[in-house]
Image (cartoon, rainbow, N blue to C red; front, side, top):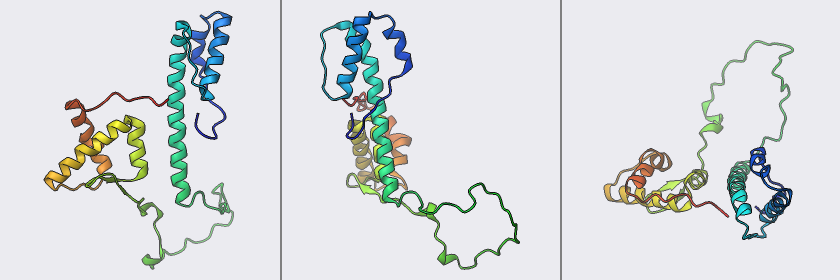
Length: 193
């Protein structure tokens, strides 16, 4: 489990498998799950427990990746300043004393459009840059090994042609992944322990 994570989700669809086990085997499976989520790396020679545990293990890994992705997103949002400190005066949106609308501000320079603030891009090779969040999305969706392959393909292409893109991340999504698959470079996604 991730550092600081003290709980996990056990999905109800596992019931169909556990129901077919004897009470002794179900107890052994439950203890095996608890050992796994507490990083004890349990091993068993019981093939029934191995078979019953494997789909549970895969869902635990998926949930852990999702949890880590959310933590990463929250860290990135926190670095941007996090949630505003002030609460809105009228959160319901009800206007009690309607007034005439104000004239628009003519001083354009003093207004800051927060949506247009760009996140810093990191350099992942000589010619490929993207934000940390974009990079982590690729890892989450395709695995770290494939992400490195995508970056290498795009880097070689951009380096040899001089081509530039507004977004290397979108370019990877648009054609680099397909190219990696066609060339047989795409590896099956390795699940995290």
